[in-house]
Length: 465
Ligand code: GLA
Image (tube, rainbow, N blue to C red):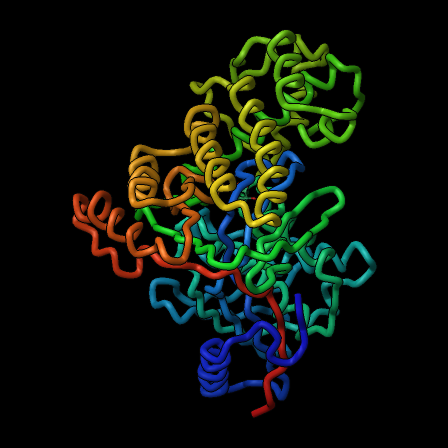
């Protein structure tokens, strides 16, 4: 998070903020203090479905942002409007535990950001009754449900606006950790990649992000490289059915970690990241072999057999893996828990991410592209989160000369990212227009673009009315 004047804001964004401020004043009741926040979406270059295992990722913030302009209000409530008429205005009270709207409501991400701030500062002794309310206008330009983290951009922007109006500050890394946990509010057990990328982005840089503790190393994008992002137009709505699939993956990975940990006598392990950090000179092949020798490749979702292999009581395992109450994960009783293939993806992907960071740093674009291709294959074959359409789009990008192409984000729809030389972009566009968009009758305009790595989120004061 930068807070220097205009830092990270381009002129179009400043103009958007100015227009939103005028709208807010026109609504009346604007307090003398007004703040503007920008929070970008992200594209993940490589490191998919590794963050919630505490393993590294390599995304970049993008030059598409959500902007919130907000003013403090005397009432202890949040009033939030959206410039997109599809998202109607919402009003809710600031409380210790804000009740969520029904699943799928856009403003749950605003609530998530606000609740995160209440929880974080509440645990440090600041009562929510001391926090001022706000009137906010949201203008989102990160494509929605396209795998580019529009949801995290909104959560981060809402949290920053609420903090700034209340005079609360946090170091960027702390803020990223807070925002990552905040999004659990919407019921998705995400890792911290999206929020960290949105907060820590740097222009023209990829971000090598490690977790526990959160660390970010910015890596300059090699000169002459271009990132092409193309939307499959297959909706990847994380608040809908995809949420069940996503959360199941989180459970599967944790189960795999516990089995490996038991074999190599590590106590209290919950994630593959903890296994990796406790194993000197680890490598994916060895850990996968240990898992394969210790357990069948999949378990019934009732967890009876899994508990037996782990030597723990089934009910305790259910509580630990799924949690309880409204925030608990619901498993599909007809879908087995795939342990072996999920772990194989996560562990080999981790090796790819580490190599990719070094390759990007060295400007080795061909080799980096090959890793992106391998990542996609692993996501499709082992993680089962690609789709026929994503596979076709990836193939079309490669046919057009992309150095590498893969789905980006959670998958199950959404976008792909392709690595190219700047000079090769037009050929890739031609290929995906012809091979992917045309047969589906989709106008490619605005669906595929070169995205630039952009600056991280920042909050600024706007002049009083
Ligand atoms: C979603 C989540 C992230 C990450 C990706 C998959 O975008 O929000 O935390 O898990 O999926 O890599």
